[in-house]
Length: 63
Ligand SMILES: [Zn+2]
Image (spheres, rainbow, N blue to C red):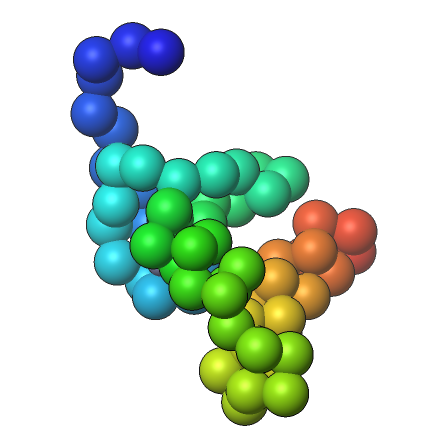
């Protein structure tokens, strides 16, 4: 790990964060990742997250 702080835009909350994970070429911030993990699958929020993820995945596939 380097000490460099490179902010990237999270695909879920659309805020610039310097901590998170990469899915394909996109970025998911650590806060949203944690949120996603503890969100119940029946929660509408969970669907929103999934939708955002699907969006980027299909973009990767079809672009
Ligand atoms: Zn986020």
